[in-house]
Every structure is written in structure tokens, then in C-alpha cells.
Amino acid sequence: MELNTLTLTEARQKIRAGELSPVALIDAINDTANRVDEKIGGYVFRDYENARAQAAQADIQLPLGGIPIAIKDAINVKGEPCTAASKVLEGYIAPYDATVISKLRAAGAIPFGRTNMDELAMGSTTETSAIQITRNPHDTERIPGGSSGGSAAVIAGGEALAALGSDTGGSIRQPAAMCGCVGLKPSYGRVSRYGLAAFASSLDQIGPMTRSVEDAALILQVIAGHDPLDSTSLDVPVPNYSAQLGSGVRGMKLGVPKEYFIEGLDVRVATRVREAIETYRNLGAEIVEVSLPHTQYAVASYYIIATAEASANLARLDGVRYGRRAAGGKDLAEHYSRTRGEGFGHEVKRRIILGTYVLSSGYYDAYYLRAQKVRTLIRRDFEEAFQKVDALISPTIPSPAFKIGEHVKDPLQIYLTDIFTTAANLAGICAISIPCGSVKEAGRQLPVGVQILAPAFQEDRLLCIARAYEMATSTR
Image 1 (cartoon, rainbow, N blue to C red):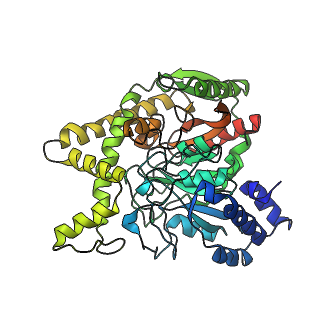
Image 2 (spheres, one colour):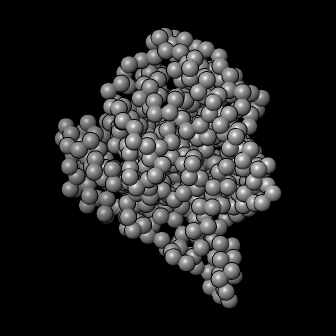
Image 3 (spheres, rainbow, N blue to C red):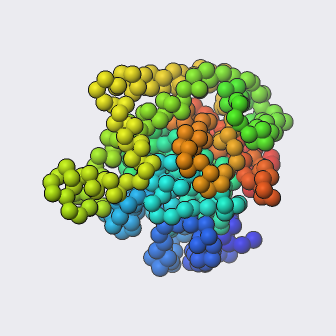
């Protein structure tokens, strides 16, 4: 087996057994990236020499000792650029480590490479990046998903064993489904957001993207936990995720939301997901149809709340303290206008305008306040469902990866790719996407993902259910 195709767990075992050195692993990852990333475009920055030096000094007895992990370009790593794939942050070098990076380092991991993303995490295709296009390794004419598309692409392309992404409305799970890897969105408050470039503060969450559920459990174990630097981080006990992975699903009740199998869902995707549901039935789980009646309002509510929060968060990107600064402004107002006009791309401008509108006088009650009320109803839908079942199963995305440029002029169509993922962020629960086969299109096999959703802070249950399917089907 090629070193760059190992799971994190396999690499860890080989390193501890003396069969593999961290330096050799970094070399293999970097060599692959040198060969293929020009075509895939997953990385926007790599400091190979520094990573190799860290690998040479790695303490292999630590939980992730000597393991390189790619980092989404929205997460601060001290001494490295953190542009969030936006011109407005050109030249910004992170002066500190995000809490998740500090935790990875303490566990022996080596942050290696900044991965491409939709600009400021606003997008579902990675096409809005101001730096480059990222392509799906399964078919380089197609998108990798977004906004954490670079993280998914480098895993699928053999350029990374694992990565960190961030998920505001599906930005970990959706590219994981399109690229055929595992993507976990932890519960809101489970993982510190300190050091993450903010998009929508009540929705954002950092999580792992990996080749296996076992790997996702290992990384979550390291990055989870209360952080006093993040006021939204909750002081909730962190269980031993790996210890419960093999418990199985026999006797569990798994719900299938009828609102997630709707018109517009690709029939091939629906078939793969229903096959996954049957696998769970064969493993001893009871399958129950449930209803989440306010699902139809999730996308609309999400795009009101997320854009409103984004318009407030992005006010700090003004070219005064850091990042791009436009020349020639005769006063402060013109400086702001030029800097933000030149620095932000079309999609970010669109969302700032929408967010400012829904917060403006005369429209706040009609849009933002109403969206928050719908958010409460969506949360209650999940609470009621979880009184009947242990977890929910659904498609992750409505279709396989589509071609680059196919929907660039139709943003609404792109927004609808998040139709099955946004509700989990609005409710603050945990969710994971795992591969469940593929569909054939234009001579290529394109991955399909199945989504599992569990109550807030029940990641141990979520991972156990995901692992049961993975072990039964050898999806890797």
C-alpha cells in the first residue's frame, strides 16, 4: 500500500511499530502533492521544510505523534498565511495558533498545508475562491464541494491523510460526500472556534475530514473540549470516542426523515442511501420513518441568519489593521469602499448585501426575527424526533458532484445543494457524512454520501453508528 493512501490510524500503527518514520510519511505526502496538486488545486500553501523538521523531532508516543494534518485556510496557524481564500486578507500572516491547532500540536500532530476553500467559507463548490479552482480527484472536470473543498480534495487525491475543515451549513459534510471521504460536524460548542475566521458565529464549527470513521474519532478526541478563549465553547465532558466505536447498532432505532427524500433528489443517490439504510436494518437496527416538518424552511432560514451574521462579522475586514489596503482613498469612506470593493468577490458581496438588508430597519422583524423563530421550530423538530429514535439517516447531498461552472450563474441552485445539511447547523446537533458507494456518470464513478445525525453532544453515538456501516461494507 502506498504511504499516501494510508489512513491516519494505519500510519500511526506503522510509526509506533517502527515500520515507518514521520519524515518518510511527510516526504510521501509532499511528493504526491508535487505530482498531482497542479491538477487538483487542493493546497494554497505548503511549508515542506518546516513540516519535515517537525517530523524529525516528533514524539511518536503522543496520540497523533508525527502525523501530518492539512488545515483549511480559515484556521490560524502561527507564522503561516491565513487568507480564507480572499483577496481582502492578502499578506496576512497568522500571529497565533487557533485552539484546535494548539491541541493538535500538543497531541504530536504536524499541521501541513493550507487547503483551498470558498472565499471566507461562502460557497458550496470552492469556485468562489479568489486564489484558484479546486477540482474533484474523481473527475477533475467537476467540483469537490465546499466550502472545505480543498480539504476533501487533498484527502481524496492522496495528498493528505486527514484534514480540518469548518462547517457552517454543510461545508464539511457536503465536500466529504462529493469526494468520497468522512466528514464530521461536531455539535455547536463541542470544539473551540477561537482562531477560525468567522462566517456566521452561531453556526460555525470546526471538525475533522478523514479516510475513516476511526480516524475522525481520533482527531475529534484531540480537538474537542471547553476553551475559555471561546465564549461559545461549552464545558461538557468529552467521552472516549474510540472506545465505543465497535459497539454496533443492534437494538438501536434509526429514523428516516420523510422530508429528506423529496422531488429533486437524484434517484441514483436515493438508491445508494436506501441501500445503506437496509444495511443498518440487516445489522439489527430498527428503521422508523419520522417527520421533521419544518425542513422545507431550513435553507431559507439559514441563508437569512448566516448572511446577517456574516455582514456583521466581515465589518472588521476594512484594510486598516491587516490584509489588503486599497490605494487612493481621499477619506475614510472611500478607503472602506475601495478596499472592500477590490478585496471581496461577487459571492461575498452578495451575502453581505443580503445580510445587511435583512438586518435593516423595517425588515429585521420580517426576515431575521422570523428566521430565528423558524430556527427554534427546526430545533424542536429534532428534539421530538430524538425522543423516538437514537439517530437519523438521510442523504448528504441531493446529487453527485456537478461540473465546474455548471451553476455559477445560478446561485440559488448552488444554495440548494445544502438542503439536507443546513438544518443540523441551525439546531446545533452533530452530524457526519460517510461514503455509501458511487454512481456512474460520463464514464466516471462519482462518490455518494449518507448523512447520520444525532442529538447534541452525542458524537460517541454518531461515530459508533457510522463505524458499524463502515465495517459492514468496507467502504474505504
